[in-house]
Image (cartoon, rainbow, N blue to C red; front, side, top):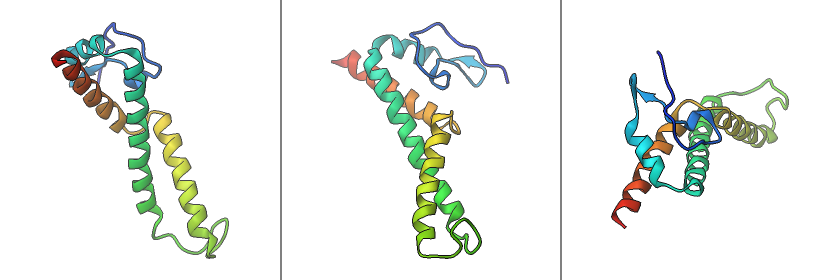
Length: 121
């Protein structure tokens, strides 16, 4: 799959740059980014990344809910608390490193919605 980047306002993470969607440039997002301030873009990026972190935390929690016995703490009362903190950190790190693509779609939706609000206001 070949992706390309469209010239637009620079954004801190490459996961949030204007790229092609389904092999075609995303001109709709590029136009929306022109209408939305850099502060709003940064806030939308953080919100999207946080959302993906929460989503991944829910997924990782379900993946580890059935684990019992051997591990750093064995099968003690503290294992559940430790495991929940571990999965939370895993999900945050995973989302900040690029995640699975949920954040980029959430970011796109947030920017398009904000651009519509700016246009009608």
